[in-house]
Image 1 (tube, rainbow, N blue to C red):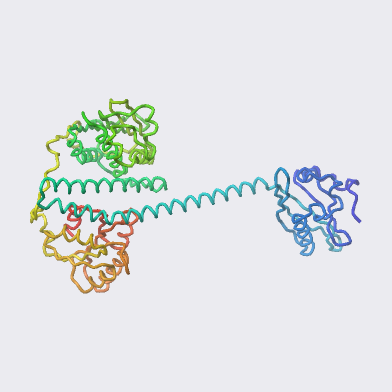
Image 2 (cartoon, rainbow, N blue to C red):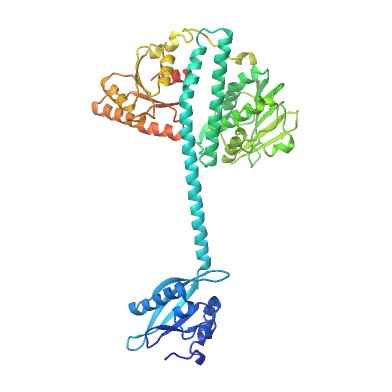
Length: 535
């Protein structure tokens, strides 16, 4: 016989802030609600008349009622407490209740009541659901980013392989005896291929930025030398347009810093390249200053030009991807519009800032502010203000004929046996022609398996190893060669990667496999020779 709740037997439960329910086991074995405290009634919106004397199935109905009644009966049978979640559908908002149901025993050990304490975990479930959706979205985004990264890496490889043939053979063609028109054609092919390579590199750099794959390699380096070398590298382009290129390095500024010199070089190359591109007359300057009293970004790198300038309305967009400020029409088709976006990302990755001040037809000033740690070094006479002589930096005319490279320059390779593992016939021809005058004995194989077999039966001084080859790739071929050397106690042979897999991770994988150096396609003749000399 159920107790009448009006007797106030359970009235004290209303003082408890936790939601409490009480069910009494009827003679028919079914647990029926006899009490819900004020907290529980507030959650369920039930009155006493709604719940008293009803089972969970009668009270809630449907799947919710069936599941709740099943849990009640299970606790009675097991005679043990249980915790479970109940979903309460609502017109406005579905609620989730986490209930711990405990059996109550009389003096004879018979389960007479079930006491439940409930906690509203709706917010917790919603938070968990939101976190799960965020996790799924993040996983999808990472999956898409990885797919894009793989696609770009594959496209880079597929493009670099034929480009190596274009650049390599056009370079060799320029060394032959050509008339003026032929030299113009060969030079155009070579310069166009280089421009295409710059676009590919920009796209790959931008993909790394989007995937947040930029890493900083901190080292001690001479900023003074870096600025000077970068200016010299681009001075030929400035000289070709009749522009003066000036470097001003403040005597009070430290010469040596701790930071990522390759990233700073890329920043300067991008800014100087843009300045030369959009300047037809006048000059370009690179200024370096350091404010020792400043606690915020004391190092200033400033690139100034007298070019076409940038309208104020466009200055907010020039650092966006695939955007270029309006300028001379002949310049608009050049480049990807990624240079400044990449530059800004690199600067911000180092904790710095970049800004521009400009007016149309009055040039532009790009200022990079960084907080690099200066390092004290022995004072040396340095460069404070130096205008790079145009006459000293004009590119020398390309020599023609078979004597383009002198014999002493090639002597280090004279008589050496070089094994080249390369499956692309065009790239085999490029290597053959580049090394034709070196005096080296060159043997070609078309896959890694043949490379291992040839190495074991031959006596080679050098191995040039492609990575992507049929039957056996270059990494595994290198591992097998190193294992063979250990087993036969032979002196290690220099193995150089010669590959279109040009990512940093590819270079790291090559070193891990046991290679000695890494040369990415497309490569120049001088790069190949420099890599081989001294090996």
